[in-house]
Length: 460
Image 1 (cartoon, rainbow, N blue to C red):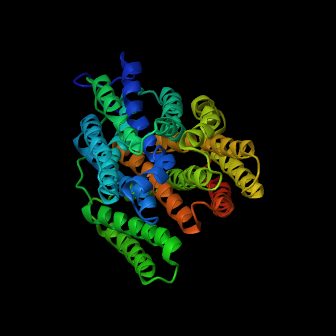
Image 2: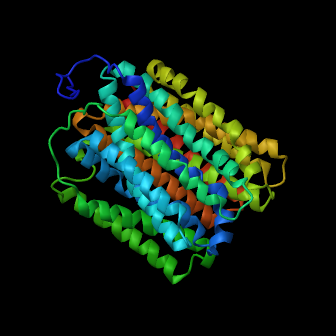
Image 3: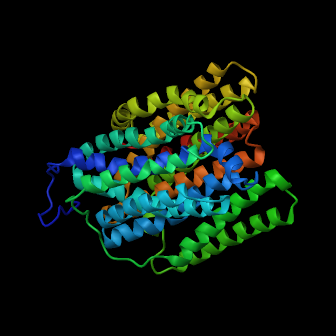
């Protein structure tokens, strides 16, 4: 039987009496992480003009965050398992507030990119620890699955609502209005810090060393791949810099496979990765964010540069797609409990294929409301995949790897986001049909892999 420690009280299956307020504090942290993944998209043209940044530098304003998050999530999960999820989570909240202020004060593109990377560092501390803390609030697995559904509703809403909030802030008639985007974070971080006071710690399991070599190779591999894809859109695929970036990425991932087999405490423990349900959840999470975040990124830029919408109108464009994010995940959690995560994930990726075909068929000159419907279809697919993959890993991962497992899941999601930006930048951030074609390939691949590769571990 899994043992969970609630402060100094013996482990119990009773729910924390302050679970609601503490649950809200946990979701605030993840809301911040997801806000900052998408809120900047509508501001990129304004930031480029205000800071006089190059076209190649702009995608890095978004990707510096996601590359660092994906590279450090496994380290954050290992640190949370070793030093305590509560300690890591509260420290990361304070760091997120401080680095947000630094981003708001950035005088140039290079400083802003560095600030976004530091935000990614703190975001990495928030993500895996949050779901480990849910194990404390809801020791009973059935209640935890329902809590994960509610958690996904709130946190995924941050991804969808980010462009709308960014557009509202950019409605202020000032070239520096984009700086307000970062000043939203500190008050929310402080509120989350206060609400989770006194929360217990999950069972940490055996203390493990942090796999520094593996983590550095992960960042180098993903960062180099993103750099090559982004730069290829500006200078072409035959550029020596692009070819060198892909070579560094390939060497890094080959070295990573070699190092991880011999590491004393690998970032992703073999005992965890050997579970087929865990591998499926991580793969689904990666492709999910590649598809959903890729569409949000290209739509935000396409609406402003091709359809000439204002930042405010662009932000409001995304509002209808936020409704499934707040209403459907609890229903998805019930569907997972009844039909199993595998079936729900297959259903989600099948809808992604339909949605990608629909957006591709629209081209670039259809009525705006038709693209709203496309975004809505993407959101309906996302609210099937995200909660089902999260619940799948939450149940499949052993208790001692709770934070590490969630770190792996979110590393996959953030890697998918980074690759989404990179691929869209290579295709052309104003090329909506090209982006839709890339997403169709990704959705079809995921559907085939999960539908036919996941049969062996379908839940009983």
